[in-house]
Image (cartoon, rainbow, N blue to C red; front, side, top):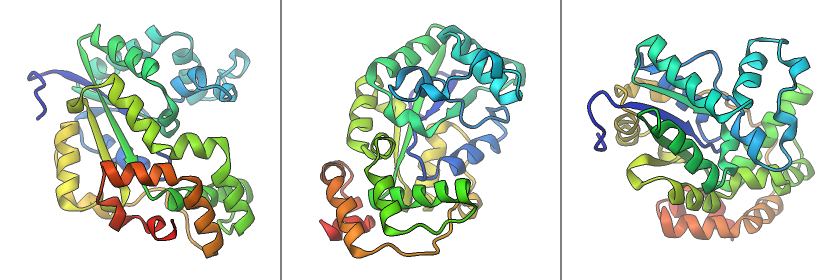
Amino acid sequence: MTGEAKGQKTFILGLGAQKTGTSWLYNYLASSGTVATHVIKEYHVWDALCIPGLGGLVVKEEDSETNFESRIRFFLQQSPENYFSYFAYMMHQQGKLATCDITPLYSGLDRKVLTLIREGFAQRGIATKAVFLMRDPVERCWSSARMDSRNKAGHTAVNDDEVLEHAMSRLSGLRTRYDTTVTETEAALAPSQVHFGIYEEMFEPANIAKLSVFCRVSTRQGYSTRKSNVSEVTTPISEFVYRRIAAHYREVYDFAARRFPQTTELWPGFRYL
């Protein structure tokens, strides 16, 4: 393990990034039999309340009874105490030692918010652990653009201009500035409380085992083939767009090369810098 006391309850905070395997992570934890979950994967509490420009994620009272998810999110967004109490109760009610909130937009949270989360759970005797998954920045942006197209237009075909616009957006920046996310996370949590994973290698047996130990769930190697929420590639992007996006996120590539050197071989974007 990582030094936790036997019987220590743990809250697992999924920080993203979007399109890096977070749906797989949630399903892996939820199916473990030892992690308390509800039907909600992404609670959208801290991003809605703490990241400028994301106020549209705040559930209004008049919309809170629309469905179960809206009702829960409205309650959790009312105060930090509601959030901490909800997850503490869920573990107690289900008789589990762990629970999770896997919301990819949490990649934009700063150290103050992450410290607030850690301290809020600590006051209830619950340890906080964070998982942050990363993927080649160009590939992540391209996959995200395809998913947006699928959700809005019913297909995953996106042209160069659409991918480029998507990659350059503020939201893509929040999801792709891994250097910022890693720095803010490490300022709030101890090394033993953070797991950084690389999408391109996360399904390898050794890395599944490492993630499982960190999250304190049983290792299930057969789960590696169960990919979730994959967006089909129907139209390739041009080399020009690949170079533009890679250049835009050069600082991220430079950071990854220093901190996670295996990415220089795993991430195709390095070839375009």
